[in-house]
Amino acid sequence: MDCIFCKIVSGEIPSKKAYEDENVLAFYDLEPQAPVHILVIPKEHITSAAEIDESNSSVISKIFEAIAKIAKELDLKDGFRVVTNCGDAAGQTVKHLHYHLLGGRDFTWPPG
Ligand code: AMP
Ligand code: ZN
Picture 1 (cartoon, helix red, strand yellow):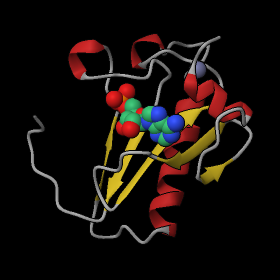
Picture 2 (picture 1 turned 120 degrees about the vertical axis):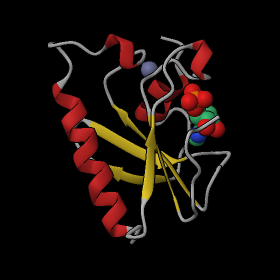
Picture 3 (picture 1 turned 180 degrees about the vertical axis):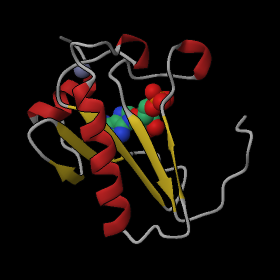
């Protein structure tokens, strides 16, 4: 499958890893939008949040366990933001489910 995040999982495309376990990979975003900007993904290809169902949702809890671990490790105690863009209107450019973990600065709400 021609998916850049699957290629990052396989090692075909290099990444700067922040966390890895059997089901989850986290790596630094190439174009950081905050002092800390990490992408947390399931190793299994899931296209977006719209494709989560009973057959694959267990990895979502693993992703959020990883997010909490990374946030502790990087000392993001002032707060952080977790975002997933789902579909073109939301600005999803890579069609492999990913959660942006953003920290190290203040964020506005609502987002643009
Ligand atoms: P989204 O626009 O929500 O689909 O986010 C995709 C993100 O992937 C963007 O923030 C890109 O900067 C990031 N990105 C694309 N290719 C790579 C790569 N090879 N390594 C790390 N981050 C990437
Ligand atoms: Zn993929």
